[in-house]
Length: 153
Image 1 (spheres, rainbow, N blue to C red):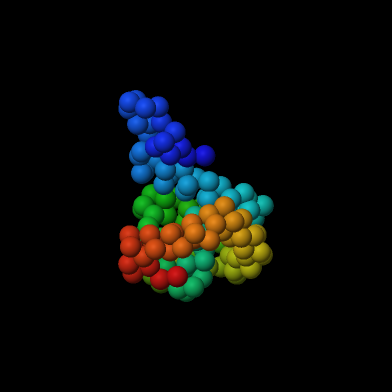
Image 2: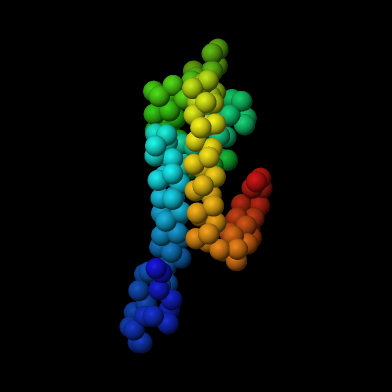
């Protein structure tokens, strides 16, 4: 559990766990991501891969640059995950596309996996919501809109 500033020793240099915003956000990220990763593991997916698969299915065709922008992930993370998903036949390169941008689309196997994994994702969603509480979810929505105003949910 993250300590508050009140938990730090008086007159001591504040500990990173208490004061560093990046440390606190990363800790929350790891806790919440682990909930989703645990739920999706039986399907051979991570939370990031589920997001990529879902985004690609919704858009029909997705380029890596679009995924990076939309999911706020770096190029190497997208590239690594898309490559893994192509090897599992969940995504494929769009025929006749520009070889440099390699847009992807979801395969039939990918669509079936999305459908099967949806129940586990919803269960993870409920667990994460319980962990964050109603107040936490409201704050999360406010922070998301403030940090990324164009975020479409």
